[in-house]
Image (cartoon, rainbow over all chains, first blue to last red; front, side, top):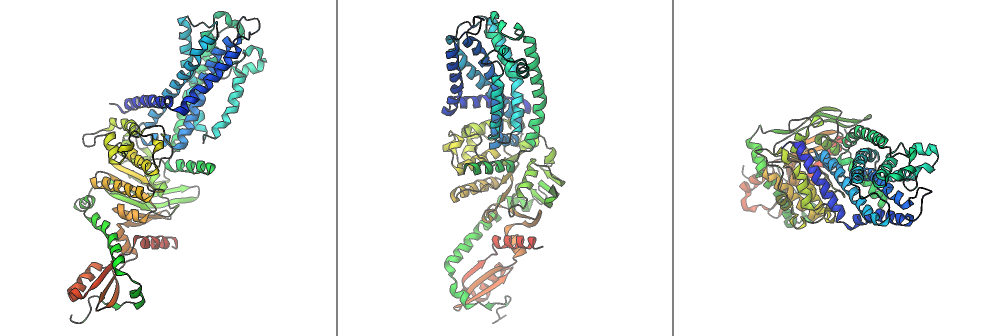
Length: 282
Length: 345
């Protein structure tokens, strides 16, 4: 068999193994359930708060937005896992294996995407019973949800990999948290963007979080909810445009940055990081 | 030559030395040390090395230089390794052992010189070359959630495309687990393993693709004596099969002496010695010390021909010779004097 085919298969099975590990491990399971549960509680309290004259409860509007936010957050997961794997030598092992990097990356994409699907399900399934007014009976909704999700992953995972290569240690990853939280705050996830000043709206629209939220709302909310959005439109073309641009940027940058990062990996660089990490603990 | 104690000119030993000596115990210990070398002479690799003068060159390093800024870490490194050899790279901290090994692994770009590993320049090697080379990395906490057999099976997958008629890749995970003595831990998670078990797993990972050449950088650092012994047996077993060329670095001179067919001493960015432990000892410290008693008197003599001397003694005096003791110049003496010479140059 062709070595690349072999590596793709190995990567696929690597992703499934990692996914299974994270679903059968107490620590990871707590992680999987923690955020979706928190978000469910938030939604629960917002279910009876009505938003202006729209006739929709804030809970109904927030629910799909949170799905979009979670999808965008897979960028962070990717970034964190890549940094951690570089720090502890997982990546070096991949480098020492023929076509191991291909397998490693594919495995990461499979496990992060799979993990995301689990997160979405944990949130969405109980959520559908919590709030009313979602357009979940229409197959078209699920079709839109699927393509938005798929495009969102292509837009965010490569960028996540680029970010992951830029950080040296899992600790410095923490630096990302603050800007990301700020981004969520202005991205119309918990409150419609139209109530914010126009310049903030422009910043928000440059990043994928807003568009993933919008896309999810377009999928799961009835058409009458569109009045809440900018220009009173679901703007599917713009969604494809912005997410597509992020995808192209990520797919162009990621191979270059990843290759550069991998080239610098060696036994001594991992040993150096281990020394540093142990010093911090001790 | 009646009466004369020639061909060996012997001198009566220093009486104080004779008193301080405990021949029985020390003797046993010394000969104990010699044993591995004796065994090594009947080692299949040696036999092959002797019968096949032109065996395949697996590692060929010529004029290797590595410069960081204005500092030369490696100035002029030259050596070769032949198929099936066990090579040990010794040297003080900062001598450039790790740098050298990483250049050969293809993980670091050299500044100058020629390096050929399995006939290919590692700086431009492809994944097919990668499949023929095994690297034993020191694990830390990577793949902690993976189970031992599961990880080996997974990593083995990548090698299936590089299986050949003569070398079937990868190594069967169960057999490999058994070969490194981890059968009982096969279904354990990697993070549950002890330090020694983890190191065995590191070796197993390095071997899973049935490499023709294996690199081990300080494989026994931080291991307890039991784990270290286990590791030595593992490498000896691998070497005995004669299929794999092994290059390892270490600080442990006993380890080098025990495992290596040939020892390279790297210091100041150069190979300052290259040979078997015995050759190095002879080359540098030069002489073995032979002690014996005859007629209740102690004698001591330094010679490069200790076996010859003993033979002559018995031939001349027969049973009168007692407490014969041959002390080879130890590798430690040799090593220290080598490094000292190199650094005072």
